[in-house]
Image 1 (cartoon, rainbow, N blue to C red):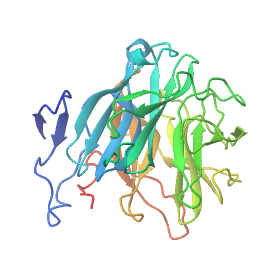
Image 2 (image 1 turned 135 degrees about the vertical axis):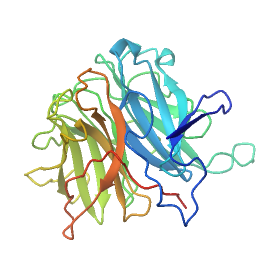
Image 3 (image 1 turned 135 degrees about the horizontal axis):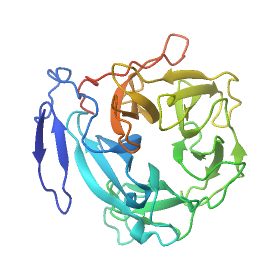
Amino acid sequence: MSRILQSILLLLPVVKGLNQIPLSDEDNNNDLAGNPIFDGWYADPEARIFDSQYWIYPTYSAAYEDQTFFDAFSSPNLLTWTKHTSILNFSGVPWSTNRAAWAPSVARRRRPTKSNNGEDGPEYDYFMYFSAGDGAGIGVAKSITGLPEGPFVDAIGKPLVPDTVYGAEAIDPQLFQDDDDGRVWLYYGGWSHAVIVELNDDMVSLKGEYLEITPGGYVEGPWMLKREGIYYFMYSVGGWGDSSYGVSYVSGPSPTGPFSPTPTKVLSGNDAVGYGTGHHSVFTPDGEDYYIVYHRRHLNDTARDHRVVCIDRMEFDRHGNILPVNITIAGVEGRLLE
């Protein structure tokens, strides 16, 4: 694969792909992204689609004392990725322990397009929810540019979720906005407990009471997916440092359940491809084709922090069940966003 290093503003993006020319409608499916999709040790990837770009917000996979920032990656086509460095730095989060920056989740909220002086302004506000390790809690930051690459700054000067609730360590946030009623939900939880709490419209304060929703086998890394009126609560199972790590799901009629009693495992390692497949997210460009983004480990590499980000297809059967994911080295086809 070719690699191009270029400079945009003050950022140093790293671009990787089989074809650096934007895809046309005719050659959109000729190239494969390859797994991992970009260079570097990263984990816990959250995928979003903002402004006709694919975005991935991961954890920098390193020793805890070196995890003091978050990078992001964007792509127009799933083939070429631009690195946005240090979009949030814990040096600006005084309540953190300046280490163990984990598992960010980024969401946007529409705001009036006119600023106070009557001029056109950004259409959205972008918010990042993040884990500050060592028990400091879950924080919330806001983009000061109105752009998905930030930079983000701490929004409230304290943790949004400061304590252990229902036995759930305050890590691994995921922000879910329900398109049916506009309600906003925060899922989170480590130590084998999952918790959900509703947010206010301001996106930086809690509205409701905490509710424990721990399904069978839950360990960490919650992800809520809604498809055709069904809520799929997905999460990581097993041990994050070994081959037991994977993803299971339960489903239900609402963001809070009740969920099906028996989980189904849909993401596992492969002795010919990689292991430690977990802490995922899901995106769909059109509501029909679905992609799962996750981290995994290279075969025969046992270094604790050697994790990489991958994308593969995720499919459903005619009954709405998620099928087991086929993890690959080739990755997915290039796809432009309309």
